[in-house]
Length: 367
Image 1 (cartoon, one colour):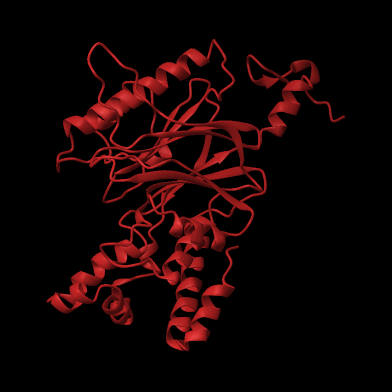
Image 2 (cartoon, helix red, strand yellow):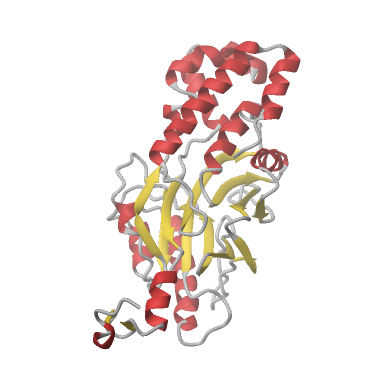
């Protein structure tokens, strides 16, 4: 569980009993929602994999610094997953390091360098994971598109690929934050970026099926794709044209926005989702519409000029809170990572490998 004590010690030091009470009530409400909406973590049977765009995480310019309270809520949410890809990490890693302190010593992270330039927005991406369950498997790198006959336009924010091991599975994860551009489902540059990255990763992984290179033989592409619709856009068509599959469990989720996605390139069908996946809507528990009056004092303190000029304090609050947590919700899927029973049945001859059925010669045996 996260480390709670420093937050409440700080409230006590500054004598803010109202904030202490508010944070305690919110954390209890958030934990109840997490227990209801997200499966409980297991020791070795399943992996809870998630992706979350944390809006301008560490930048703290447009809406002031993130409150300690806000980081506590972020830590609470992340602690209910095993491995999470994070987008929009700023050049300043201070907030990420504060978050890791809240999560505890058994959590670790891997982060990229910043992507320079206007399109790159000085952003990083990161993986945060519980080392008791997930091990970094030695592979890490930013994806660079190969040069063609003409100069190649690289992806606006460099995709980041890492290998991890959890239970019986080695998994390559590539987190992305593709170009947004225009308010158009088929923005040409966005479509080109998704197509180019999916093609490159699929080509490499297809070759790996017959010519092993030491990397995992599957790739999970996850992050902020800026996809507008569940299907029918050129963005999703670009993914599917290179044999990346958005799992049924993700496709069936009803949501207002489909920017965040998780897609598999897995020719050997090694990645076995359970029936459970979802989007965690934290706004039901923290920074709710009904809470705006509690935070006006904080808004006035962190962005005084904007607060004084605002003629619609409710609208200002709704925007401010997206910089405290995010304007995205975590997208998650549960994967099976324990295949002990199947291995023992096959290795012992109880099940024939080719037909995956009980060996007739052993039928009826109990010992």
